[in-house]
Image (cartoon, rainbow, N blue to C red; front, side):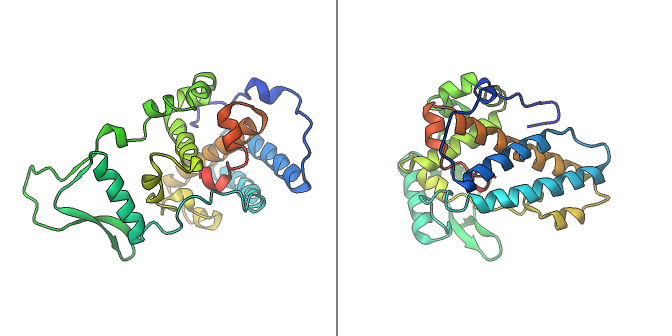
Amino acid sequence: MGRKNKINRPPQLAKAKTQRNLTPAQRELEELVDKLLRLSTIPQQQNVLKSLENQKEISNITERVKTLEIGRDAKNSVDNRATSATVDNFMKWALENGAKLNGCSIQEFEGYELGIKADVDIEQSTLVIAVPRKLMMSVESAKQSILKELIEKDKILSSMPNVTLAIFLLLEKFKGDSFWKSYIDILPKVYTTVLFFSVEELEELKGSPTLELALRQIKSISRQYAYFYKLFATSDDPVSKLMRNRFTYNEYW
């Protein structure tokens, strides 16, 4: 969300909650999300060690949140993106829609998952890969979807294109019959960046300027999750109805 952006609760979140029949687990989850939103909105500490302590509190909450949300994560995407079927489906979809892949192919590399392999010697200035705009998930395509009205109303979505794309990607994933399904299926499920570090691994970064940047970004994404969880839980627009029972911390991360 960035250091300068302060989350203001949308009007619908400030209203009294409507009467809903919540299970104890659902009630606990909502209480945890409230606490997460408060903790992640605290300004970044000047002392990085204090920020790390703040992250430990956030981590404890998010681990419990993930436990409570087990079973809500999307079931309509493949578990292993490196299967030949997944790669073949992606290539078929891409080529049928105007993409070009000349002299190379998608292969699995041991220890690195999927990558592009050159199958022939490629001469300088030769076209290797071309992707038409229609295959690109963009803010423009998001504004042509059911997300359009929410982008116009919500200050976070209207001012942060990276967040808009994240929500749009999840919308398309949850739809099941998305035009981009073959692309979504082949996306990595995890990354080796600091955003996926445990608290113990983050502590190993003490003394490095990377730690402060990592803590700020992790805190920002946690805040975004809490904000949109509450938005989807209390709104009746088409996006919220689709996201309400599918939007989870794991999915957003």
